[in-house]
Length: 400
Image (cartoon, one colour):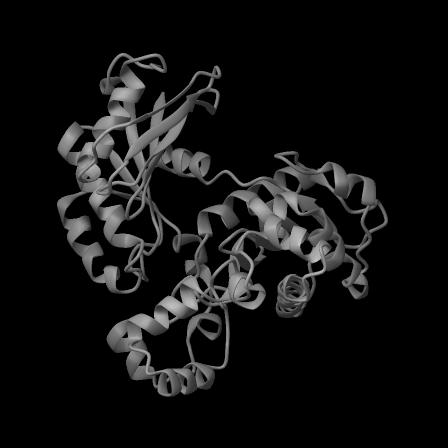
């Protein structure tokens, strides 16, 4: 059975076609610069055939048609027609309190999602456009399923998700902690339980999704107790260009002094802060590492802030869960930045953590494994995430 997974952004549309009998990826790729000059599609098949070419894409419908053509024709063809696909799974960032599990696409569901555009203005509107584009091309007979980033975090108790603001704003606008990267946190939690040979319902896990956008979750007995991102993906700790948690008064102070509008404020906090803002070099940790090794003190500082804040959250979540059985690193930085993992673990000795430096050095570029030593009281793993596969699995479960 073939499942197509779609992840639509404001100017992009990524896809994977997965054979669910073997969970092998038959094809994956994406459209870039949708609505812009120089729009193109590129991708790769499971047997290694690659392609890339420019084609006009005035909207997501044209982008999906380009995906259709890539899958069914040309040098990278993998199927004869879209009727061979049994369902489409869509990633949606914000499902609010209403959507707490995978949901079939219907006109009524799409209408119910509209209010959540205000909570995720950069992510939900293009996702909805991508869904409508798919409906326009394949019609309503092919099942389509929505999988929400916020769903895995919906198990948080009120003491975790309620902000200490006037309660009326929670009731009126839904202002609360929602959390994001839920599909990734769920995938690596399930995988950690498999690797450890224990039921997820018996484990206390701290999952660290570290990339250009980063978040950490406390997963206690299979349910999220707390997570670092809040109402939006801006909350938490230092990321590539996002500031994470800062004193709200600092933001108000700068708005007054600099005369920022709300839009300008959002731009500074989301796109000019974080590692880029502190270092003045880059939002990419590879660039920061090179600059730090060349003696750039601000690049050193940016990386130090990141590690310090990650350690603080791990400590806080260990306290919140009354201990931890394992810590999981995933995401582009979590899976590949060995000095970050070593630094964080070296300062968690109070948890009884000890790591094998050789294993830490080996576990990069998609390798999965344990980097803690046999006598470490808390296990530490590198587990590459696979959000698309989990979306495909959940899509298949629902249509069955």
